[in-house]
Image 1 (tube, helix red, strand yellow):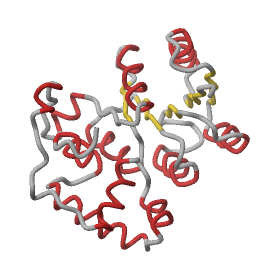
Image 2: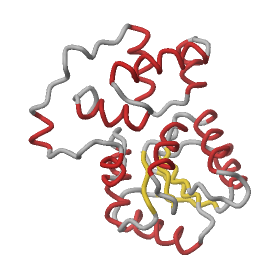
Image 3: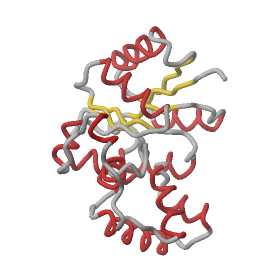
Image 4: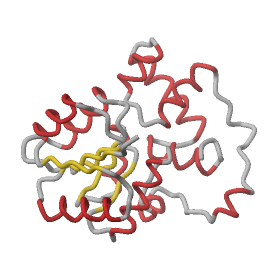
Length: 217
């Protein structure tokens, strides 16, 4: 399959740098660009067969909240990596609430950007190490993580497990409800229970804790 990506950013220099790097490093065979949210929708309506969407949250014609939520609810099969100049912990945590699969600061070196994208393409999630520490988690070496076992106390009911699996896929609450034939309020109730079991407060922390406990890769 021809690997395609869509970069959405209103800064031409950033777009061009990303396109050049992703193509030259062989991450994608085809990289398309859009500078506005409207252009993004037009491309997705024509074909949503993208392996990744790289999204800036500060577009001129749509706020980050509205744009991200719309894309994740209407095109849930397209993974999204947020590429933003605002890399506060709150912004990163909120981006994962909206359903992104990765968050990369625009101040990051290109190799960090590429590595984050490769992680997402492999089915994982990428959260910047600095944000991980701010959320109270210390990144572990692979050898350390391999020795850590999930505690006996982490047990989900069948419905909680179904919601958890969708949560780890970066699926928004509305889409989880549709896929599992639940009311959205019921999904939120299950999420609250899942957070309590994992002893976390939000999706980003849930991803980190689940990875730490080896519930996910």
